Length: 475
Image 1 (cartoon, rainbow, N blue to C red):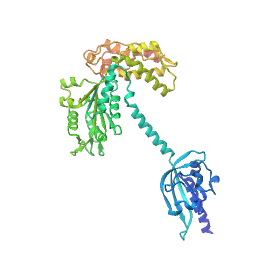
Image 2 (cartoon, rainbow, N blue to C red):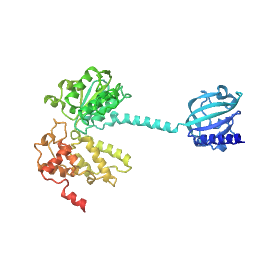
Image 3 (tube, rainbow, N blue to C red):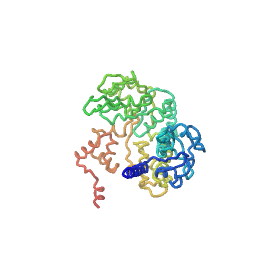
Image 4 (cartoon, rainbow, N blue to C red):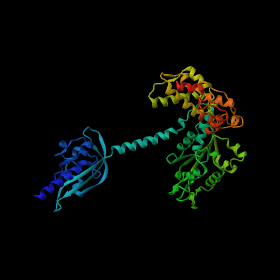
């Protein structure tokens, strides 16, 4: 009696285990008919256990068994012949008529004498995995499209020259130097060169050289070994090694220190790297693209940048014109950004009003294409009609301050004229008003840190907020 109770408990426990499994599990008897069908099978196939039990597995219409179409006669089924199937990807037909990607596995069950008494089969639903694969493939496709030549907008003669240069650069393996003001799209050009070259399927690794200190940049570029410095708890591959076989894009190359310049020159000459803390030389095969908003030759003449490295980097230079030098491209860019944010926000904004377009065309765009995109995004936040009006645009575009711009300087306008020695209280107040008292924007325009702007404000007893803004906040 106790043995019988124990057997019943075992069967119930086994049933509960099978019913709780995420994988589909069903069993067949010796005649190939379904004897059990767990809840996961119901979910995967759409057939309830009551519909499946007593039927053959032909109801699932597996598209391949032992590399053949599923046979109509269970005695011809390979699992009865060979005793098991290897796990394989195949398709089953859902009750609703659509195909479901699965991994199918089967094995015969024998009694004590070795006679086949049935089959147990497992079915793993691959729908989520297939969906994830498709999403990854779509993301990769979009990434490639984002950097296609056709996604750099422009019809002006200046941009046609850029397009020709990109095509020539993509067809070679020369080291490229991209020069242009902040916001002109240097990273897009680097991506276009890579994704239109034979290396398109290889990695594109980007590093912003101005965002890290010398020691961190050295570790980022070249990697390090465990114990090389405090906090180096394990070996780490550098970005040069990650880019092996593909392209590395070094943005803001003009800001690297003399020490990093020497190490980069060695990489370009020897095509090998040493991780920080070790002396092992590791060979690399990479395409190098660099970019800077500086006039790099001027930095060479002033002794801030190595001349030999400069000539190594500018094997094939590309200069991106500022937006104010190609204003005929502005309507195209505006339409492009309106389409982008229409899709992103769902707002049905069609275009700019004539007054808004005139205002946009008259503005000098110190932040170039990036600033134009930010202005359109700003307008989308405020605009409630089908067209963007003047008052939907940022204040600095509606009430611009005109400052002289040097075509020889790739840096942010006003840097050379204002930096430190020429900055006055009146000029700072004027800039604060133009930037709606955004200290970070003021700092960007004059080429100082936000902390430096705060220090000047403290020196001249300028409040952190305008009185008008303070009154609005307190009202």
